[in-house]
Structure formats: C-alpha cells, structure tokens
Length: 97
Image (cartoon, rainbow, N blue to C red; front, side):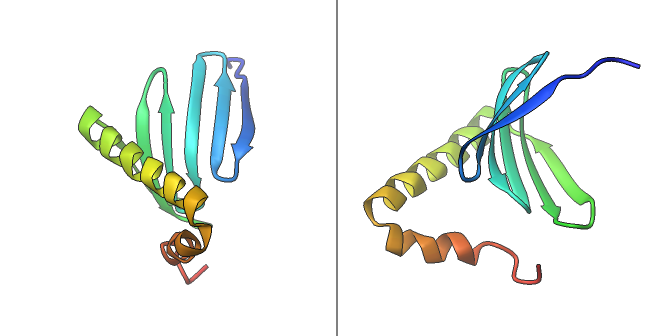
C-alpha cells in the first residue's frame, strides 16, 4: 500500500488549490461540474451529485483556452456588475437537487 498526501485549500468560493506529493493543481467548480488544471493533467469532470456517476475528459489546449476565456469574462463581469451575473450562475445548476 502506498502513502498518499493530499491537501485542498479554498481560495475563493468554487476555486481550490490542491497540494499533493506529485504536484500542485487548481480546481474550479463544484457539485456537478469541475475543471482541474495541474502540472500533470488538465481534466473536466461532469457528474450527477449524490449518485457517484460522472464523466471525465482530458482537456486539450484549445478547449482549455476557451474554458479559461469564458471563466475570465464571467469573473470580470461579476466584479463589474454582480447583480447581472448572479442569476446566470444560479441558472446553470441542476434544479432537481
């Protein structure tokens, strides 16, 4: 059995710094959808919370750039006009949970 080390540090709501013995990564998202960007891999995971069912895909450079661009635009818009962005951020979350 191998010894593992993992520590998650919350930076902002929905943004985590992950530390392990193999490297550092950042996770963005929460229940239902998470993007993880690290030194070894870049993945996007979509799942159904509470069921254990999920789908993970490795991100290529173009997809990663597009996702990061959308996130950057949303963050900028959130800081400039939070009342306009909050309904959008709540709308994408599944209503059944």
